[in-house]
Length: 257
Image (cartoon, rainbow, N blue to C red; front, top):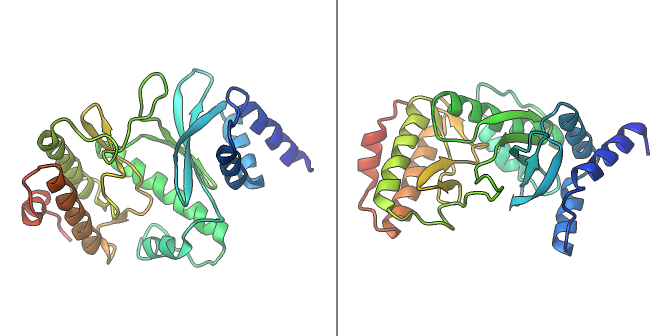
């Protein structure tokens, strides 16, 4: 084992010192996400003071795992790690193409992943600066993105609306539409995959997450994606008893393409 890997592996052991994996599923996830380059990346981020401990999974998806990180000030951080083996590169290229911020002309999977993570970081920064209710991005490196932990002070993450329905759907939906309007008109982005799976319920306030696929308004596919997002919101919130329709939302958002 070379010195870099040895150091990364040692740091990996330190990061996991407070909470060991307890079952086979956790061990399987660990083997999938903690490859050589990911370990080295986490080691660099730990040396930079961003994280000191990884403390369990927030969510597990096909392409990425989100873990709870803790740094020396005992502040929680969300650590999103993209996996090479299971990522959908065809989908990633679809959302990267047409974005003037990126000029991806490679079939190298790791370079595509790194661009994808950079894209999510830049989207979050753009949204956060525009005042949209999204997690604050801290930094990104290779296939790892560090961002604000959305949860309580004990480290319990707030749940997606899919799992934690709002007590007052009408009020929650009004707040959500205000965020979507800023998303489109202030940040000049379209989410592209907006649903109750990636809208967190933070004490009856929406927080929009998972913006890696979000595109700028001058992307040729932005209008199509916004129409899809609105149709999804109409369908899901009607099921929650909200009286709404596509035209009402479109007129409220008033996007300019």
